Length: 459
Image (cartoon, rainbow, N blue to C red; front, top):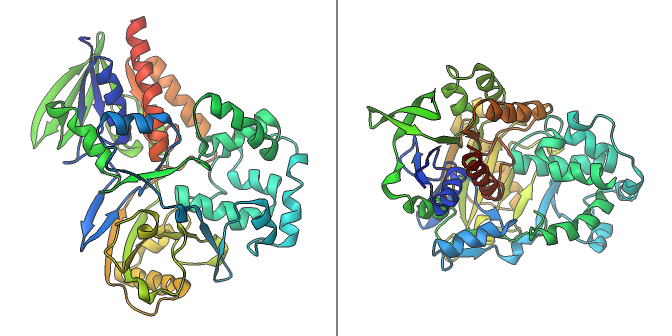
């Protein structure tokens, strides 16, 4: 086809969407501000250790993942997580407790009190909420499962996924499938059972059962391989400065390597961050700019620590651990990186990825960095039974990390739909719409590409 589509951003959303469109015959150009692809997907090797400085993995919730791996020739690079990674720990009263994954382990666990366990069995008898869209995940869980389950399961889980607070995140927008279980089936337990059959029909897997994947050389190999398929049609070091609507299309102005340029498009897909797009849209659509500006992105410090395995008392038999807010620690949790995927560390060594800040502890990141890292290491060593200093310390600071789908986000989502209606051929995508994870972004890329195709069919 001779239809020219310009995509803003060479993160996983932009690259996968562009990939499907290119396969369908569209003339696709991608403009990327940075000098390499992947967005927050960054993989580096330091002193023999592989460090993923953003997302460390993805969940194979869609057959699109295996399709990409096959078509990009990445089968020899593709790896699943070690089965040990199925075991997750939660910190309570300074001790690590395995999150129960079966009824038997749930009954035996000391993570929850007997009272909390009994309360959980009342869930099928709890009715639907009256406030619907404007309900936090904290309100939803407390009503259906009780306070203790909120404190020691959902609170740390939300911190691990969103670096957020359950009192602020919208259950409808941030956890739509959880919300749908109540709305469609009347409850979580009965809804979970009934929804399994529907997912099988769609050839989808729940995030609970989907396999975790990465690549031998880190998660960034996926966007790098996708980027190669575009050749000279992917422009790096290229910052879009303005967008103008034309008759039947759009004109994009940009700076590349300090030199001005422009490109005409029949359709535009923006997959850049909400705050970057907000700045770009100030002179195009003030209301869209305002809606995007209101999306909070908390700061997160990703800390990478390495140790000799011999110095660690805690058995390395899991994914890592998350920390409930009630534990009052300086970090949100830790991933046992060298346990989850093989060859992430030299023989006899172990590596860990810790997360500091988020909505819960944003103010901590205002402290002196070295002072804060010392506090975090001291607390981490105590939990893990380590009496030595780390072999190495590395970090990546994300000033604006994960978009928060807070209460009332449904109004923001409605405006995205309205914007696309008022601006035919201009599409909004990325991790601020439809899910923040790698798997969500890949899964959402296909319907976004189909929307573009439908637009040209109707035009």
